[in-house]
Length: 373
Image (cartoon, rainbow, N blue to C red; front, side, top):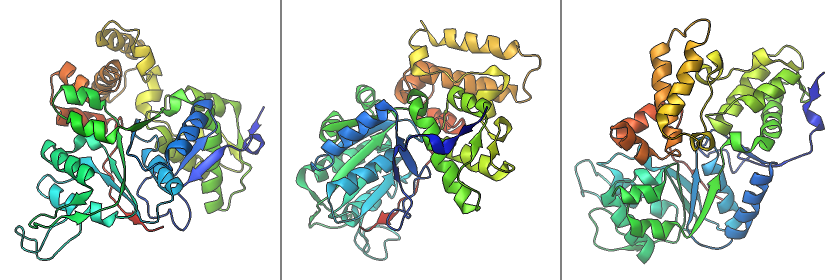
C-alpha cells in the first residue's frame, strides 16, 4: 500500500516564496490552512487585518508567527514596508538606538545620524517578535511611542511622527510576566487589542500531510525530481505520531532531507530524520494537554524515566536526555510559560531560555530585513 501525495485536496497555502517575500528572515516559509483549527484562524485574520489595530500573536517556536504577521500586513493594504525584529536579539546597550534611532554624536561610536526600526517601518507594519524579552526601560518608551505615534531619536529633542501598524508575538504568557513584574501591564493593554493563537503542529494534525506535500514539491522541483512522490503507510503513521517540537520549521527540514536521500519516488520511514530526543527509546514529547492530568511535574518525569530505563540499552547521551526530559516536562506542566517554569526550577529566566533553546523548545534569534511593497 502506498499513498500518493497529489491526491490530497488542495489546502490554502500562504508562502513567503516570490519576488516580494523572499527577503523575509523566517525559515519556515509556508503555512497550510487545511485543519479546521487553522481555517478558523485564517477567517479571524481576514476579519482583523483591514482594521488598523495592534495584534498580539501567541504560539510556539516554528509555528509561523512571522508569516502570519506578514499575511496581516498584506491584507491591511498598507503601502509601506514590513519590518520584523526579534526583541530577544536586541543588544541592551544599543537597544534604544536600534528601535528609535540616534543623532550623530549622541553616544560613543555614533558617527552619523541613523533611523530606528520605527522610522524605517513608517507607512507599513512593524513586527516585534518575542516582545516579552524587551527590557522594562524600553517598554516605557515603547508605550509612549504607541500613545503619541511619534519617536524621539537618542540625542534629539524633536519628536518625529510615525505611522505604523504594530504586530507583536510571544511564546510566553505575558499576563504571568506582568504578575512577575517582568512586563508592563499598561503596555500589554496597548498591544493586546486583538489576539491570535497559533496552535502547535501536533494539535492541528490535519495540516501535517498537506504541509509535508508542499515542502516535498518545493524541494523536489529544486533538484528536478518529479512532484508526485509516494509515501509508504509507515511514513504517514510516523508523521502523525511524531510530536513535532520544532513545528513547521522542523517539518520543512525533514521533508527537505527526505527528498534528497530518497531513491526514485518512494519516501520511506528511514528517510525521515526525526529528532532523536523525541524518537529513540520510545520517549514522548509531553504536551500541555497531557500535563494537565499531572498533579505535579514529577509525575511526568517519573513516567518518562521509566520509559528510558525500560529500554534494552541506555542512550550514550544519557545526561543530555535527562536534562531535556526535566526541562521539557516542567515547561509543559507550566503550560509553556517561561516565567512559571523558571520559578519552578529555581533558575533565572535567562538561564531557562538557554536550556529551552538548547533543546529546540523556543525560537532562536532572527535577524531583521525590510520588504518594500
